[in-house]
Length: 362
Figure 1 (cartoon, rainbow, N blue to C red):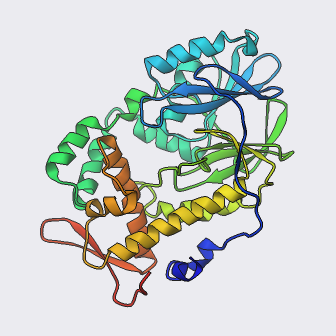
Figure 2 (cartoon, rainbow, N blue to C red; figure 1 turned 180 degrees about the horizontal axis):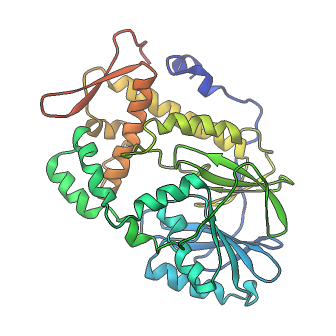
Figure 3 (spheres, rainbow, N blue to C red; figure 1 turned 120 degrees about the vertical axis):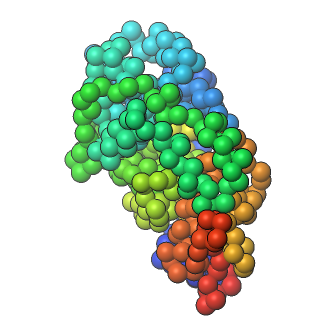
């Protein structure tokens, strides 16, 4: 693998040897049933109406109430789940006191406004994530419709684009309106939540200023979507956003390489785990392999849509196509910026990518 990686900026793939394997934390998790991870730290699993059918959110004990990290999607099922959670014995009848949002995606911020209004409490997030929330909830815009020219340029057939435009979820439907004033979290100063001091860690690529929180004692990390067990976060190109998000993601992963193997990662999806640094290496290896596969396939000019089977190895359906295109564009843009591919728009308005003549065979 070392030799194969050489065409694609080798510094991004430096491997750390001697790391212990990733190890799941064996805790039984049920939907809408809080579970204690440690004293004063609860995990709550909420439903999502997708193939990835849940999100993990976290409650931190403040004595007279709870700080909540992430909120779930604004759906009737999620609201009903919250009614169940708030009545659970582990919460002791105490209210929410503060909401912290890791990033702007609907499954994380969706119910922040609803819960904030219910408890009359503040919502906090980083400035980069607040800015995107503001753009996406602008009633004058249809963010999905704004993506259709990008989809067409990258090869999506017109009939599929029309169908996708109907199927793609709308942000404002999944995200309850936020309070007029949202507190901006510093990404350079520790924050005290639930009696622990947490160091903010910024991730990029999945979202512009994604917040993870590392317990200063090194016992826990609330990871959001930046480092996930078994799956990879969506790294995609969208109009008006980062046009090389995969590079941003890979560079920001470096921040997470030095985390103690015994730190418990509390992720937004799947099971908590030990071995954050080891999981970072797995994520790097995944993207290196995908980039090499794309590079190998681009022997003749191809559109991004034609590249989807290479990148995903299966047929994508419904809204998966939209997210898959965004991710495939991210991989192709990365390789073009690195000088390994070139692209041009043909007479039909479709952008095609091909390997440069001097690019070594992967």
